[in-house]
Amino acid sequence: MRKSGVLFDRPRKRNIPINPMSSDSAPVEIRPFSAEDMDAVLKVQSGCKGIAAWRTRDYEQLSRDPRGMFLVAVRQGRISMEIVGFSVCYRIETEAELWNIGVKPAHRRRGVARALLSEACRRLSEAGVRRLFLEVRESNLPAAELYRSFGFEPLARRKDYYQNPREDALLLVLKLPDPGT
Ligand SMILES: CC(C)(COP(=O)(O)OP(=O)(O)OC[C@H]1O[C@@H](n2cnc3c(N)ncnc32)[C@H](O)[C@@H]1OP(=O)(O)O)[C@@H](O)C(=O)NCCC(=O)NCCS
Image (cartoon, rainbow, N blue to C red; front, side, top):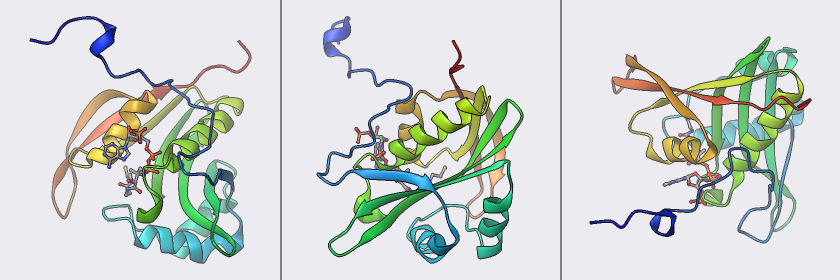
């Protein structure tokens, strides 16, 4: 039987981590997408199994939409700066949705997705957003664990939301702090 008490629990993570340094030595920079990042973003997307497959014009549209928030994660590579991940959110007044997030396989488990989420939340919060929603495949354990550790909470299940393969979606929500308080 497990002894009760915090000693045996995993340390709790803060809801919105603010340190974008990875466990790797090279820091991760998070910045808004710009047009010349397109090929690199499509490359990240193609390396992400199960991610929503967007086309160039979807990303272009979103980057022009004032309600869109398109961020890229950049890290110093051997020769030049490399785009290693990206995230896409969409905002409507005080609510927003995370539409896509992906990290290159070789750069996973180094805090890149967490840094992208932290920066997205900071910017959304400053823009007046109070709740961030997302849907995730039930079987996508890395993503589900990322969101859980970040502070997202389960809100609902969407039956057969995904196709190929058919699967339920879990709808999660994160409450964002009001920067003015
Ligand atoms: C999900 C994904 C974005 C995570 O990116 P990442 O940069 O590796 O995530 P991070 O390094 O920031 O991990 C943060 C936390 O998430 C959890 N996590 C991430 N990957 C995990 C894995 N494979 N197994 C278990 N937990 C995992 C851990 O709690 C981790 O913290 P820790 O490393 O200190 O234990 C990445 O695996 C990915 O691009 N997957 C394919 C695309 C995808 O599924 N997108 C989500 C669609 S909803």
